Length: 309
Image (cartoon, rainbow, N blue to C red; front, side, top):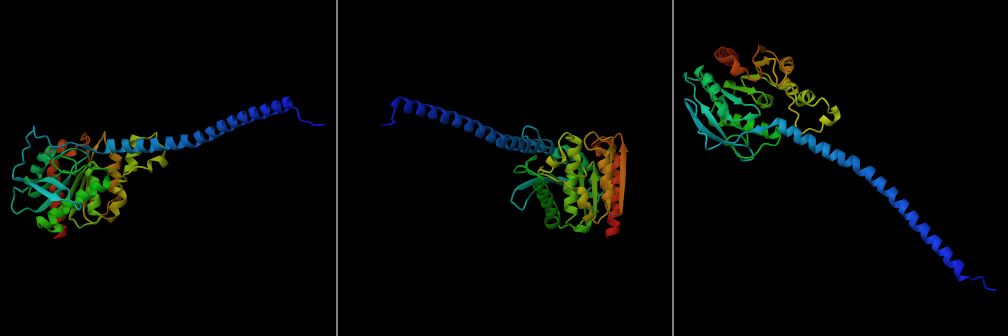
């Protein structure tokens, strides 16, 4: 006798089919959870990484382009100059001739992270009155300079181009070149001085490193995440390679870069070195100090030049 019974067989097949569907659904849900568990941290890491990079750029660079509607007045005894970076970007500057002949030295000034050279014409004139030629210039993306700035490598490349312009086109001896940086510009001055010969370096309101600034501005960000930043600006480390007289000046208190970072730069600098902490000067020491401050700057340069020649 045959054991075949269509009704029973059909019921068994229907049961197995239903079980397979439920099994597949459970498997699909488990797989989805696993996928989400893998994707979620990756997505979080992606947005955290790019968010930190965006924030880092936003607080680091504040370029202000040249506005033709606002007439720029070239400083007294100054001239428009252009020079090229290694990547053939044209940078714009003002070369201000000393009002005392002959010039004792040429000062290359590296401005901070905001504005452009039109904000510092008075500084250039003040130094030229005291017997120095002065080069004021804008980094790429600032003022009339071409391109756009992305990170510290661009900053250092532009600083190098300014130094080369003074040495190769103005024919200034390295022993008569002074590097003067303010705020972010101090990192450019230190970078050049760590690799090229110079008679003296002046660091005003400088930061010791990007890590130190991140700790101040983003204390809520874990240390390991700060390591993903694009910039290092490690002036404290580079100062070990700077072998010329150093002047470090800082306002106290400084609401932008803590005064303690100026002291860290001073501690890292080689002898001979000098530290000036100016009470009440804030972040813009030269604007606060006026003629007395520039007189002290000039006296430091003269002493440094005398030791080199």
